Image (cartoon, rainbow over all chains, first blue to last red; front, side, top):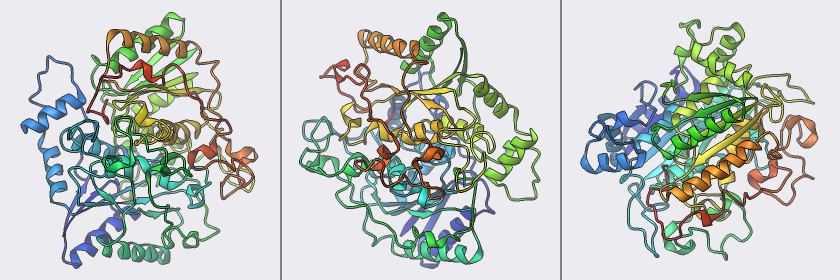
Length: 285
Length: 285
């Protein structure tokens, strides 16, 4: 199969760098084709702006959606954007790997989504009627493909637990997993999470890579997160609110899953972390 | 008072541009001092990388936190970063204005936080003991200052409502409001939200500015969101989980507020929006 790894860390000699190398090696050894978009190494342009649309009428106000729509339809996007779109089209599995910086992805990766996810490609697709509201949330350009986050955090697993002060990690990742991955049609696999990155040692490092390897090997068999499809009957259209009889016992983001949130016994086990290892750097990893 | 407006939109001749101009004018007319960080106009560098630390030892691996810590302590940060930190120090009220792109801020603004929020300034501050876990979440450099989001979305208010498919807007903004604003000590005001931006007309535009003006005029009197302070007794330390007896009827992010989520009758009123006005561009505004 074809794997795309979209990767954002500024330092190759880092935990993230070693995870990246391990991931590529694991897939290559298994006979798969791997492409890597190493955003820092590529010096990826993060900012969506009028320069992304060289054929646009410069006398008119720049409209992020409108100019994207036109450039995508007319084939006048910039070469860096079309190259990433082609990588997405080729991929069967896309892995997004990044350190959690301030409870989200580094700016350079957000800019990858802002620019590569064009109107007509990742959004603004399909009819809007009383029965359907575009082709999205369970349908879309990436239907049949799988996506998975690999995320490192400085903070402890406890701090990201159900009652942890940072908020549950599943909720923090919802805007990404549901809003950026499920939205254009990906099946979203449970994330691979590494907490407390400052408390690292060779034994723990090996355990993490071993657990990651098992996840990568089974990525095409793993049950995706059961987000609810928009156009298959669960939502009222056009309000797009979940029907009153569904998820009556849930609130917040959890409404939009028909499964219960799974806990991964390996990667979420705090025993991975030496109990006496502290860190003050909780928001950058 | 001193107001700082951190603003990210690529086109001045836009709804966001008119909201920005209105905001500056409103504060100036009231006798306040306003500074604007217009990130696109400044061509703000979005990517945190080794170039941000010109005095670092280039032979060593770049460590985002460690190099930030040292540069902040030694006064060797880049001039663009220190200028923004000075603006923050001067400000009594900081407004962050942006269009919601893919359920978060544009990359250029994420990169403002990634770079300006240095170790020793916005995080990594204070002792870690059995009684305190750093100076954060209710304490920190920005204690006594207020912050407020002004956010526009293409999507409808219904789609961001309690049971809307995008997830509740309060939850989508939690990583920003709680993780980026409350974390270093800001009092966080309820956000000012403009939904369904494509359905705009002069009357609605006037109504929005009028409602915004009322919010700006009362910004120093508005009751902040009642996020729970980390070190004042609500959380177990060092697990940083909310004590079992608190928020027993809540799940997810709502645990971390001691109030109920308020609905703003003006800015959230769907009557603001013509019922027959549709839009296909829901994720970019």
